[in-house]
Length: 111
Image 1 (cartoon, rainbow, N blue to C red):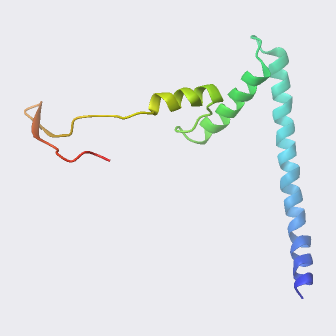
Image 2: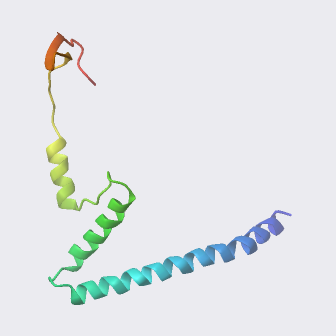
Image 3: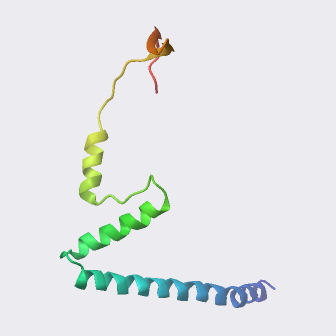
C-alpha cells in the first residue's frame, strides 16, 4: 500500500516540480544573457567577481531595505568594527518648554 502511495505522490508532484525547475532554468538563462551583455558592453570594465557581487547585492537589497551582500573583506571589517565592548550613559529625559531636561540617571545597565 505504501509503495502505491509513494508512486501516486511522485506522479502527481513530478510535473509541478519539473515545471518549477524548468522556469528556474529559464530565469537563470535570462540572468546569464544579461550578465554576458553587461560584461561585454558596459561602459566600464568590470571583473567577474565585481559583477557577481553586484548581482548578489542587488538581489538582497530588492528583498527589503535591511539586507545586503557582504563579501569576505567587508564582512571581516564589519566584525572588527562591531567587536569589543560598548559603553554609554543611562538617563531618563523629558522636554520642558522646548528644552531637554534630565530627570534621573538609570542605575541598571542595559543588556
